[in-house]
Length: 383
Picture 1 (cartoon, one colour):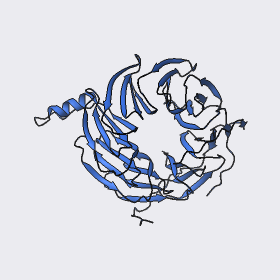
Picture 2 (picture 1 turned 180 degrees about the vertical axis):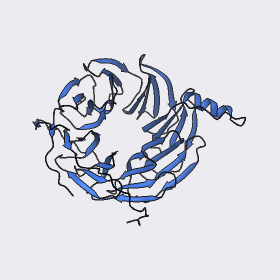
Picture 3 (picture 1 turned 90 degrees about the vertical axis):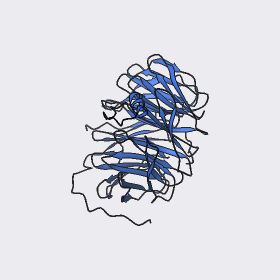
Picture 4 (picture 1 turned 120 degrees about the horizontal axis):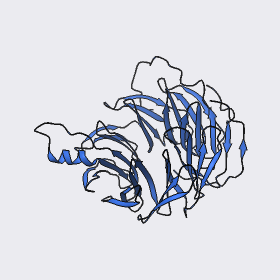
């Protein structure tokens, strides 16, 4: 197992913790959203800040970077669209009456979730709400979108399925313990997914299979058929809240407050392996080229061999919880509540190897605040 070593670059331009980090589709730029109420654009070529996005009146909760536009949402109840090159604010989306938690931009649609118990869909170019989704009894935390699809061309194909297919589906998760499936075209609730006994904190979607996976404070991951509303499977090995999920190649990875990540077969629910070694809750995870990267409340990022579960490297340097991470090329980017964006060399990780036999293992947030400022940089080595 390798040690953390030194970061390639440490960027502490933000005056508050970084809540989210988004990588552009072409991998050339990064977007960070911060407790200081600003977002920043960064070049992945040299790690330099290339634009400061100012205008929100409270902290930025989430952000998404597209090829030509950057999107941010905030505790000031608004969403903003920015020019991804100049940092100029192009549009302010107003309508939510409380903190906007998450946004999701797909083509000309902008989906949002809020503490005001609603989700909404906006037209990106006009900035207008086209549908409002009401029905949750508490905060809407997370969301996922299933794009329109071609329904079966058979006599038994129902009109309802055809209507669902035409407009696509929005899936939302809430602190009320439910997830809901919405018809985007009509705004109607198609299904309510009941079974969790705690808040739904995270959600991933297998869109082609019309299957949603939800993680909850009840320590379970659950799989659902979003068309029928049927609960398909319950993944019960965790001993703490499930905080983050990722679905990759038929495998579900779940990060938990029990200090582990677990890997499951998505179609059967079989527990494949456990990734241990964290000293606090697992706050974020990302699979990349055979390596599972994790961020934790212990202020460390870690790299595991995804096939064997072996810990390969620990990245030390942050002072507080790592809220988000991304990987591009041979560089790992970590963003923390300490206000720093750190860049790490990950060359040499993820060498291909034959997968070991699968077996089932036995069962074996509070927010931190900081306003670290300053800047320490080292020359960025070529990836």
